[in-house]
Length: 396
Ligand code: PMP
Picture 1 (cartoon, protein in one colour):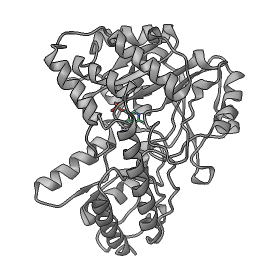
Picture 2 (cartoon, rainbow, N blue to C red):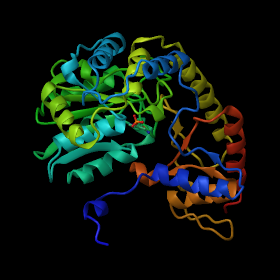
Picture 3 (cartoon, rainbow, N blue to C red):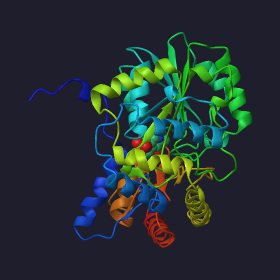
């Protein structure tokens, strides 16, 4: 069979591949602890579930407008004002089946063949692949743990060319946990002001999972707002990954373009989810805050556990629910049977020996690191890291 050449241009998500390998080992009766996947291990807040049940009983069972119900788009605007002090109208908002689709819409709406898309490393696995799907050119800018895994204004300036079309990043960042402060964003904004041909995709899906204070959006700079596409959704902050609700806030031309694309691919997202999302976005944030408190406890514990493991250097995450340690000191070592040559080998060794799944850093554009989630219970986290420590001790 001759499949399309498109399929050869991009990779399947490494995160999903690792989760699949973990499931296969589990099916063989092995007790695998999954630290590979990126989803909260909490239940969706009760008031949101109640709203969904009500929506079913009220027969919200038909097709919806492609961009989402008007009351949902208004709820997104209410949220953006309440949490971020940003003024948007429903015409700026397009809801979708998840931030992943919103990102895909935005990239396909903005990127033409050969356009350059600047992405600081480490980045979420899907960013580079979406750019490849759109036939754009990925321009990686390598950040370091010493720089807090953040791009500096100088690095940004140096990466910009006439062909630059989009800059995309997440804060809080998956996988590094870096969170940009207002000062850091101000410095980047100064660079963007000098280059009016660049759009900025600001992925804020981990907004609520922030350990250092207020979330700052780059959309707060009025001179840039027209060129900014905020990407957000309910998956992380409300523990609603399976409900599939993402959204963008963008200028009306970009919003219309995303709506046009989505109209030929999925149409509007699930009607029940949309009705529940109105309640999530405008309702009580206490359950979300409690989740973040629990993530903070786990982050602190993981940072303690990892201190005891020789050769693992780890930047302390400021948000999201991952640690992204540098494990390169293990490259070249062996347990007598398996030699670790790169982060992929490291992950496979940890999976096969410690039965803990993780994701190799290459998938995020950072080959020295590996991503371990702490979206798992504290007892599982304790067990997982004890096993990883034992497995790593065998490497000489
Ligand atoms: N952006 C980032 C940075 C993510 O980590 C994820 C999910 N892992 C998404 C977007 C996609 O989220 P959604 O479930 O809303 O599609």
